[in-house]
Image (cartoon, rainbow over all chains, first blue to last red; front, side, top):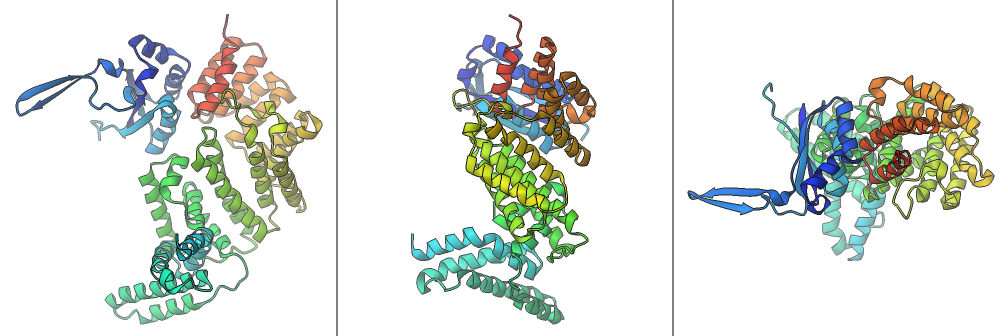
Length: 117
Length: 410
């Protein structure tokens, strides 16, 4: 079963692309990613540029509305995600608890709909 | 708040588990017992403020719950004709008054840890039925989705009912194995609480208190069970050391060997040593007594200012022999670093099955320490990094960083 683990972190933690890169290779996130790889459960994942770089678009009554910034202006923002392959939600939550964002912000875990199912 | 309301809250808090236990035994259904108790608490909220608090509030609640249960059965039974004898049987069963012998909560604990119940759900089931903890609160500590835990609890309660698990205490022949199951469930509740605590989680801290209370009940009701005293002692030792577990400046975890004994709670340590002495009065050795003896050796440092590593190694060897869990084996390896040297410790670590150790944080932390002791800086640093990646709390991460940092090439 595949699960996506979405990392929501305070934007101030990683204000620019370089600090995201540093964090991804750093002792905390780097160690977590490595643990996922070594456990043989990592399917994929990406780190994102800071939420300030986001652009949100809506089409209402045929007219477009484009705005600077993320979809929802929340205290924590989506900073990246992992997709893991584990037997069940209990195991996915165990890995989510180890995600550094669990302590600094929040982690959302959702099952992925895969083609074969 | 009115006096009546206060009384109702007091009864609900203090007597919940006992009332559920008595009702479950009489109704044969923990689920129905909870339902009926909830209804009679509701009835109390309606009538006590007007008519006053009855002399025996618990008795009133029991009687009301029993009446409501019979009414409910009548209603169901009229839908199925010809069930009069069942109703008669139920009335007879519910009329039996508790014989005043053992605490009925003890029976309920044995039901919750019955071999027919999935081992993973025993601890939360016990906490819910005996202590009235709700699924939402427990889900966070047990790291399970609240909805999932709720479903599992409902399924377990239905199983107690449909497979008619008996509420009698197990007989002498079965007793040791059944007591072990109950203790394992309590220890599981304690462990999730203790491990969830460094981050300052109140829910987790509360859970350790509830677990201690449950095991103290077993010690009081079954004083001949040495393992119960052993588990009680183990928990009290751990509680006593809690104030020394975090560095107040950095918030980092302080490993046992580096804790200042002055920060340990001396009164709790005395209690723990007394509990261990109670266990020793009975001629049987078990896992929890060994765990407690290990804790006692660490605690002795408050008097001797030294740790007897050889004694610890002997005790861990005994523990691994009767309970070869990954935790016990890793603990043994950690002690081997001091007692026999880091090479021996690494051999012991490598001997553990790869699937078990791969994502087990303490294994990596212990390996890192052993490698660092040998001066293998790069390998040690890598092992610390793995341990950091597998940590689920900030305090452990902080401690491991400082350890890894000291190994960094400069």
